[in-house]
Image (cartoon, rainbow, N blue to C red; front, side):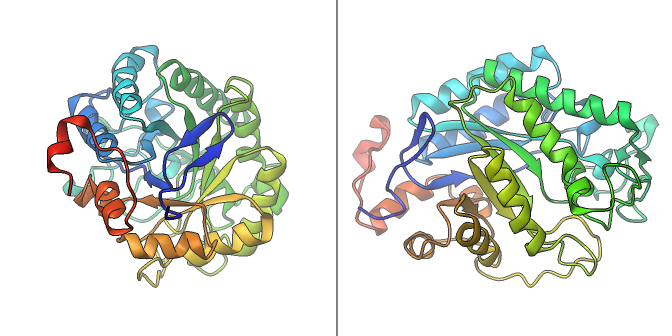
Length: 354
């Protein structure tokens, strides 16, 4: 059996393979509600054979949305449709996961195909918040710096969202601390210029994330995994670095976080990213080798041979796919054939099995 199709056990869950569907925003919700688009989008990847599916960045509050069309989990009414989706995913032998998110200063912006500019109040926009009153760019809204009451509210929002995620049938919860969203904004000195206990030193800048994790752990079962997605570098001078990511990973290991989903960038509008095949892999590899934590890697991983090599070389434990699995929901079934692995197909599709 290939490494890609070997099972991975994390606490009480067992993934049938190492292929994970990355959280990918669909910008297709009204008032945060999932709908049939999400059922078909995520359900088709379960039929396609992925081991784990992590739903798109799901806002823990209305003001935590990137756009007015973001998926949400800030009220109990959101649970019913999400539960239908997790049930379908589970029926096909795939584990359902959810990414909990707050956009911070990157909130109240238009969907990508409408230009990403700020959304005015009269068009359904709202006032974003951040660690410091620093806008992401000139085209983004100016955020208001969170006070302690606001910080406490966000922590509670993450906690209540985790409760709802459990009620909706999710088995993995991922805390989104990457891509320039609120938690990442606290981590990076480029966006965090606070002078209180949440700013300045490394220990202060990671405090917000650790408090969210501690609070979520109070409501999330101890036998189910918690992941954290980070941006391992800001790709910008004076920003968050890989060295700080390794230090954070060691801290997360102490906090009993089960896996670090390693991405990069998204914090600084002036970032310079050397994009290429598996360009983020060195960061996941370094974190894994220097901390011993389970890591997932993402970023222009597009074929079975590349995925297998990453795992065989022990540079990561999980392949997290985005664009390639958007293009081909059945990538896992195709990859199994290419790697000469025998995997179970949906019975309805067996007559087309090569």
